[in-house]
Length: 510
Image 1 (tube, rainbow, N blue to C red):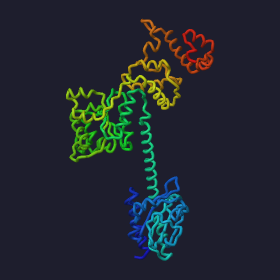
Image 2 (tube, helix red, strand yellow):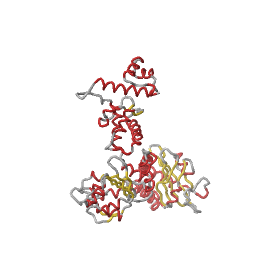
Image 3 (cartoon, one colour):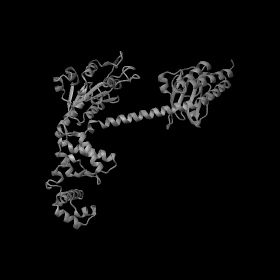
Image 4 (cartoon, rainbow, N blue to C red):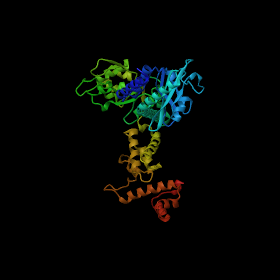
């Protein structure tokens, strides 16, 4: 077989490979280089891609190079033969690398052997997206030129496939960068420094998070509904060595009893009606990370037995399966139930309780954190002001009094919902008493305690509303009645008259 026939045969093989590997471009490029090695006597080959929006070329596929040599194969645009080909878009031929001063041998793969080096550009839509290079034994220059022309044909055939892999790499890099950014944002969000609360009980909780975060100990977070148990679980995870791995949250109370085993441990195909394919459970998905089991007190005794085994042995079987699956998962559980009472009634296993209660954290209800109410309200004011595009300035005195007087049965979650509602209904950047939900509007705070028993007094209700508006305006302008008049688009005489009639003292707000 002469050289021309050999080249045609190689091009045919490459075309067949492209057809077979069109959905796996990495395998395609490596297989093409292997064909060149086997059929053309090439000793080494490399395909370098130019990183989008940069002047850097990096080896993406190769043969005859070790992992360390591939890592070293990185070039700046215009640097060495490879960089120059990428810059000019013209092929280059080095008959003997040992006699070429501008040949970098960046990979350090070549020793003292006499080799020729051919590098050609890979051009897609007039843009040089990479280079293809080969090492082969030295020969007559006319023979090497034939190889160079042949390699150009190969590069042209591969251009579209190389463009595809370049786009895939770009997309993958963008996703990795986005994931890393999101992980950093989550880490910042759940940093202890960013948690809101300064009372003694919350300071103790911050200390407990620091104490337990770096360990693999099981944590049981206890507290009433709405106190922020999941927030504590996330803070433990994102302040631990597992922070770059998965955080899987499961609300045990929200899962039907007949599905909770499948959700936690997965199932095999055909394990039950509707199980049409194998499915991984939450414990498998959380491998290497943290699983948060909310409302752990609501799980059935049958699931409690399986959960106890996972905590003890770190292993389980999928529903309907025999294969034992071992996982490395940190468990953080939470409950608003009285588990001790559940043990007395035999609805919660005592051995599971002690496995979960290795490191307990007790969250106090909001009514016991009075000093944190305003801190939390200000935090939510800023959060929902930004979310809804409103310039929220402050919370009025009457609204603050309502918050401090209320008993907050829904805890922090209820406070957040109240502030969100108030932000939505506010028209002047201030949360007033009348922006708060009816459950907080007591007669004392809305100044309606003097209303007659047989019905509402419209005059008194209007006066109470007007009094609050005047007080807020006087606070804003430090007791300056003239500035208040301009702000409320009224005359100073009218403002002074209403101030006197409503018993407001401007000097109290200077």
